[in-house]
Length: 244
Ligand SMILES: Nc1ncnc2c1ncn2[C@@H]1O[C@H](COP(=O)(O)OP(=O)(O)OP(=O)(O)O)[C@@H](O)[C@H]1O
Ligand SMILES: [Mg+2]
Image: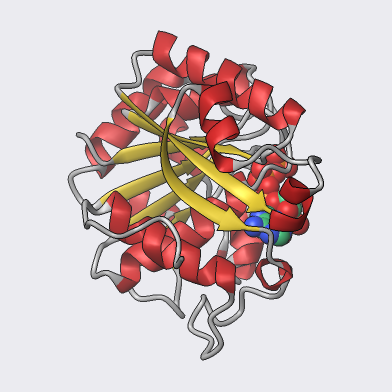
């Protein structure tokens, strides 16, 4: 099992769910079979982003508690062949079993090329459950002081949880704000987090628009192109971070 990634940030709204969804779609376009696990109990969002919320009957906690089997809870995402979603519970405190998550991910990792676990904000119980099943992490930070400090702290917790491979994703990069000195630049963000960079995603309003077409739109916005590169880099391809 070396294909399970938790997507974490500490700070809310950094772009964990967006990263999970778009990276998942792009990995599938590279021929991979991908499972997304939403661990944000009570505040799940991937089912909406992927347009499958009407198909959610069971969730990840139901599998761990033995209320259903895997096939009943995992939802195929129609518009994106080879992409699957395991939704989070709709109520809080449904899930408190790091050991159950570990066993579940171990089992599921045999059937998928990648498993991406969308962590909730914060570093409490939900974070610990999300991390328990992973052996790799993607830390999503926005290049501002608070987000960067939170990202560095989350990375420390991930290392303590024995996560072997931790990579940095800089999201919502805005060149104008870097020039004005409002945002850190890429080097400053790397230095402040001490993490190895894997992707830079620009601030791009197109990402906020509907996900209906699962990223299959003819127009590729700057952020979509950045996720294309991200997926290839995760797959071990030698692709530059950005189109310079
Ligand atoms: N690169 C980007 N450019 C512009 N908007 C973005 C970008 N990434 C994410 N967003 C927007 O920022 C908001 C927060 O994103 P998202 O829900 O992915 O964050 P999150 O870290 O999962 O939040 P939470 O901690 O609440 O789970 C959303 O409105 C999303 O569309
Ligand atoms: Mg989220």
